[in-house]
Image 1 (spheres, rainbow, N blue to C red):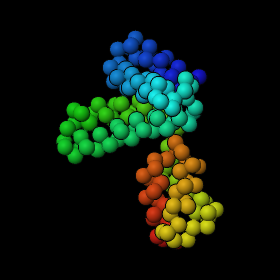
Image 2 (tube, rainbow, N blue to C red; image 1 turned 135 degrees about the horizontal axis):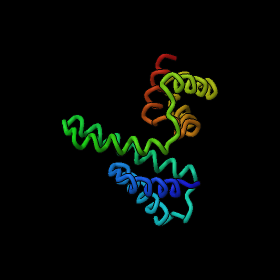
Image 3 (cartoon, helix red, strand yellow; image 1 turned 180 degrees about the vertical axis):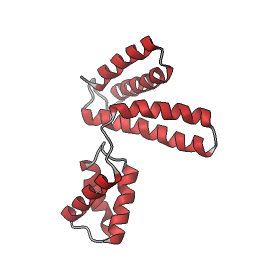
Length: 151
């Protein structure tokens, strides 16, 4: 079942249960899917990787907004972002814990042969491909920096 079909099914359920937060978020996901499909280089179907990338983008937007609203002490708006982020994350694969991420990155560093912070580009290229969807890019970058500085 494609992401679009899953979203449509959940939209029906959200309408039936009158869940405004879920409905608002699912409509945003559907709009992003339609935008992707109708964009200049888009096709009628989206690959799983494209779907994952789009969902990660939506989640990142919510996290960024949430951070801003929290610093501005706008709890009403922050609550909406938290609700939407939780729903978007249901469609994303389970994120790695910090310990799992560190273990994976140590293996990648050994595989690439990185020894200093100057080798960060080599490590990040491999890590972002292997850990796509499993960990946030910012978290990967910070962990790689720590590991290479300690190397």
